[in-house]
Every structure is written in C-alpha cells, then in structure tokens.
Length: 430
Ligand code: SF4
Ligand code: SF4
Image (cartoon, rainbow, N blue to C red; front, side):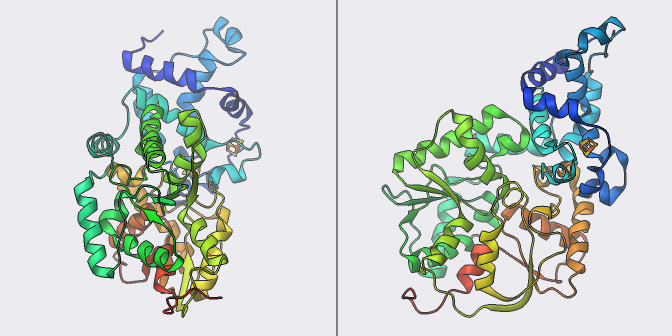
C-alpha cells in the first residue's frame, strides 16, 4: 500500500467531509455515457478525452470509493481501492482548476442530472485545504487578505476612480451614506478597467430617483473564496458585505455585472453565514428591469448597431436571470440577434470559475474563447456584443487581443448600454 503524504491526507479528510448525500448520489449515478463531453467547450475545442467533465472528478470518486461507498467493505476484502496519492492529486489540479469554469452546461445534457459544476466546487475545497491550487489564485487570495480585492484595489484607488467619474459626469457618486436604500457592489475589474460603470449608475439612479451608495468597507463583489474553493474565505468575504450593509441600514445590496459574485452573495451567502440577511440581494439587471417597468428610466433613442449578447453562465444559466437582460435589450437596441446557443444553453466564454485569474490556463482559455467566436461568426457581421459580466468582458478583451481581432466589434456592458440610451428628458415618462 502506498504511503499517504500529509498534503494528501489534508485533501482526503476535507473531501470526505464534502461528500454529502447529494455528492454521493452524483458519484453513484454516473453511467459513463460520455454525453457531457460535447457540452463542454474545453472538450469541444481540444477533443482531448481528459476534458470530459466526469473524468475531472476522478480524485473525488477515488476518495468516495475508499471512504464512503456502501460497497467499500466488499472491495477492501479484495485489496480495495488504493489511497489517492499527492502525485495523483497534483496531476488532476489542471483539470480541477484550468479546465472547468463551473459553468454547469454539462449538467443540462447529463441524463442523470449530475451537477458537475457543484461537484467540482466541492472538490476544490479539498485542493484548497491542501494548498494545491494555481499560483494566480494564490496571489488573488493574498491581495484579498490585504485589501479585500483580488486585484489589490484599495479604498484609496476606489475613491480616486469615484472622483474621476464625478468630474466626468458632473454627478455625485455617493459613498458611505447611512440609510441609503441600495448599496452597490462593484468588481475590481469594473473599478479599474471600466470605471465608467460608476458614472452609468449615477446617471441612471439620478434619473430614477434612487437613493444609493457605494461603501469604502465593502466595495468588492468578487468572491475569490468561491473560485479557489475555500469555504472559510468565501464566508469571510460574504460576512464583510453583510456587516457593512447592515451597518449602513440599506434595504438592498446590488450585485454587479459579475457572474460568480451573484451566486456567492445571493444563493450561497445566507447558507455560508448561517442566517438570512436583513436586506435583499438584487442583481443590477433586476434593478434596472424593475426601474424600467416602473417607467423610472425612460428610454431614448435605441442603439441601431447589429448586436448580440453573451449570456454569463452564473447570471443566466445558474442564476436564473434569463428574461431581465432581454427586456432591457428590447428597449436599448433596435437590431438585436441571438446566438444559436443562447440563454440557458449558452457556452461559457472560457474564463469563469477562476480560470481567467490563472495565467497558466491562458492558452486553454483562449482556445475555449474560440468557441465563443464561432458562435458570433455564425451571425454574420456583428458591431457590438453585450457582455453583462466584467470578468467575461475581460476574457473577451484578452481573447480578441490574442486572436488579433480587437477591432471586430465593441464589447459593452448592459448597464452601460442602458445609461447610454436613456432619454435626454430628465423627467421620467408618465
Ligand atoms: S461545468 Fe462547464 S467547464 Fe466545467 S466540465 Fe461542465 S461544461 Fe465543462
Ligand atoms: S453525461 Fe452524466 S452520466 Fe453521462 S458520463 Fe457525463 S456525468 Fe456521467
């Protein structure tokens, strides 16, 4: 019998704790039909069988068979499954982190309904506890511990960007306002790479008469704990937002155009901290859709460029916001066309689930982005792609640069498009 290293033991102990009845039923239910392979953009773009979704789960399967399977006593009589080694865990690290965006597309086609994305998330707990995860995510974790932002964006950097946007728009961007109705979170990528989004919020919310604020204590929406697979870190980051939102006394927290941040705070957040929040979490697209329905952000002239939309997996397929962005698009552009696979069947851009924060995965990610480009090419000439997730927008920008196709179309956020197409009339429509 091979010896188990301390690192492997830590991973195994954590994985055993992660195997609850849901995970056990998934691991028992797989009939190895291979249907999930063609649903995964990493398999589709490489045709390498190692990227078959179910194969990525092998270390967890091995731990399950040895420690939790009801038949383990029988198999052990015959020499049983060998314990998993540190070497095997490290061999699988690339499959667990680089080639899974936790996008959930494979689950749609699985005849057994196996939630591979959720199971990979649980596997990452074992890897994170044993500190077997990519350097890019280790750096993001260090940045978060120092500044609360995975890119190391400080409170001061936030305030500098706020000041620039106030100058740019001539509008006040409220910060740390107690008793505001809405606390808006942002992602680091938005704060540094597309700060115009703060100006867009200011413009829309002023028109709609919304009382809102940013916070210098909880500005970051990104939850790197979810991407790494560290439950304790994910909880700490959710708690920081909850404490600040409750201190300010807001009624709503707005999750920004960032995929996994939405799932982390809205769906997983209350379970992480073990109670309901004193406020409601809404995605920015829900807020805008509601304001639009109430006639508080009257539409102006629609953008007439030929546009399509990339559906971010965590907002649409896994987050349930399918119609809100489409209603907003109806009002904001006049020449919209859908990709063949859109809505809940859309393909990931290739960079979700922490892949874009992992430089080692760059080549694989750009390859998967090629799949997205194929979807767009099928539509003929497209002038702008609406991408309502800052992380996906970063992947589009990287991918277009790597493919030397940067000038092909504009990549634009949806809140930005709504702000750009507001009516000039400062008074809401009757
Ligand atoms: S969750 Fe997405 S990226 Fe991960 S294996 Fe399934 S289809 Fe592939
Ligand atoms: S589609 Fe489902 S049952 Fe078939 S191999 Fe994939 S995970 Fe297993």
